[in-house]
Amino acid sequence: MYSASFVWEPGDYDAEFHRLNKAIDDVARSLPGFLGVDAWQSADASRKNAIYYWDSLDTLKVFSAHPTHLEAKRQYARWYKGYHIVISEVLRSYGDESFSHITPNDRKGGS
Image 1: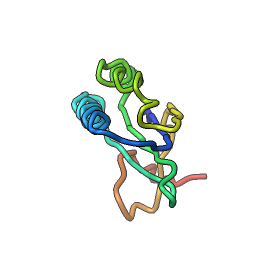
Image 2: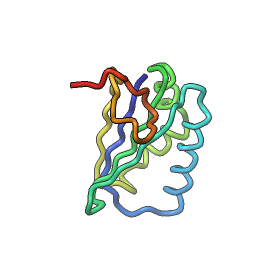
Image 3: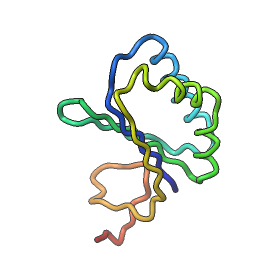
Image 4: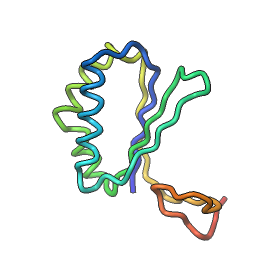
């Protein structure tokens, strides 16, 4: 399993942003290897994070090369003050199991 974290500082959104944002989300969800997404923001909302989970690096690459995604990337400066991407392989996931999560729960717990 892989994750792609998109961290950004929001700027001004317009109708084109909302159109592309929905289209990109629809593309992600349509791919067979899409597993889910988590979204977070800082307490003051000055920084946001969307973490997309994929069953393989190949599927993640298909998503990143999709024409709609590339179109939005070309225009990012219109809507964001800045961004950072982190691609990770999920090696382990655990918790107290009080709520479900996209990643599998390693029953061994961890440190």
